[in-house]
Image 1 (spheres, rainbow, N blue to C red):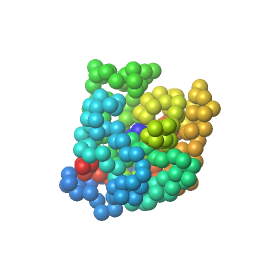
Image 2 (cartoon, rainbow, N blue to C red):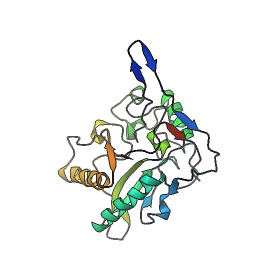
Image 3 (tube, rainbow, N blue to C red):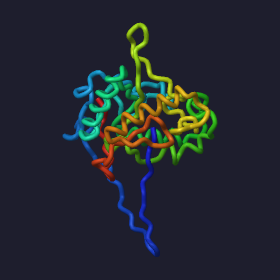
Image 4 (cartoon, rainbow, N blue to C red):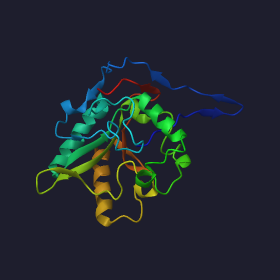
Length: 233
């Protein structure tokens, strides 16, 4: 769940900064080029992590009112390729988060600023102080809010026919070096699972974020300085 910071271009003797734009879309209005991926990839297991309280914030997150994954259409179409390639090997996609409203990012920032609230530390950031999460893990603007970034894993069917996520060596949103791509200390099988996910995503034009094995952005993202805020419903 990498949330990317704003970038500034600093020039000698002056600063040239292009401010990011939060697009004030009405709460019920989905932009014309955003697609509910269930219409394209109905086989994917959509399990939006911030719709309920089982997440690093410890509560339902602002802006999530339905278990739906929206992506900008280029990323959505590319995800179809990933699902097809995964299915050919007996897997399906298990999706944690897609488009993320700016109000959800604001919620993350409020949580991060309350250093007294450490109720989820043991599960999500056991080896870091909460004050260390802002920057590489949490910031005021997220690539997810541009519609080209997705958090996901692969799942396989168990003996009962139920889909279960593959063992990747660390859970989603574990803010820890063990979640880094290529992290030492995980098993060969876990590393192979990560490499398979990255290979499938890379083949469809997605780039992984090296701090988090689950975090991918379709290249090139259509929106680079616009952040949307419509509610997922």
